[in-house]
Length: 343
Image 1 (cartoon, one colour):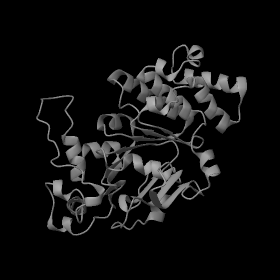
Image 2 (cartoon, one colour; image 1 turned 90 degrees about the horizontal axis):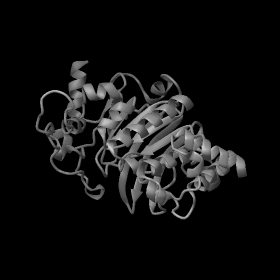
Image 3 (cartoon, rainbow, N blue to C red; image 1 turned 180 degrees about the vertical axis):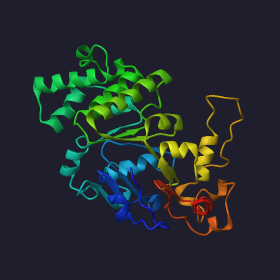
């Protein structure tokens, strides 16, 4: 994953950054999303490389899911989307329905938050997975059914052959999520967007699903974008993390660096609210206040009213997302000043 600095105090511009390492598989540039004149995603820039795992975190309402729904053209008609979303060299925003139908579920697949509501209750689950195989792989009949059975075995659904003829209501929550993963893998995607894939599952099933996604990524080389509010899950599965607040990325860093030394006060607050797994117990420190409504954002930094480190300048202009250390981006006036002093 790579983010583009809105400004650059270290002599690296966007084009130079893109030349470092592998070229991006998916590149989002200046993505803006409005609903009825209210902006919910603000000029977001983000790139993902083949085979990597990116975590996107933040409180509910920060724009995590809507960013990817907008990028894939899955928002309702009342949404207004601007910017650029490119899969390698192909532009997706404004692409024809035929192109999007081929890419969605084919090269880019998405697992939605609630598997039970995403499955058709009156179709056998084997037929639902086979439908995706027919659409994106060109198989049909017995070949499509055999491939559906193979995918069920891949995602560790027990008694796969019999389960092909089951209906969604006959499955547990964990089995439903495995069916959704099988359906997402049916088109052999290059990128898998997993939107809160373990929210409704107990801890044991969560671990199994995350281990499964990790194994599939290693075996197939696909990139994974994991959207979650659970920093514990993100820390265990993702190589890089982007933290979102009020429709903007406010910090991005390699996973280990972000957990060892969070730079943005919002990231610090999220980590302070986590219970420690080792050592002495301590009182959790919640972040005071709430995420502001998109139609009523404060002037300047949207987090400033909740921030204990705010300065007068924080209320005058939105701080740009800039590169402050190798591989680390932050959108915060106090954090930027401290990093420059440190460097």
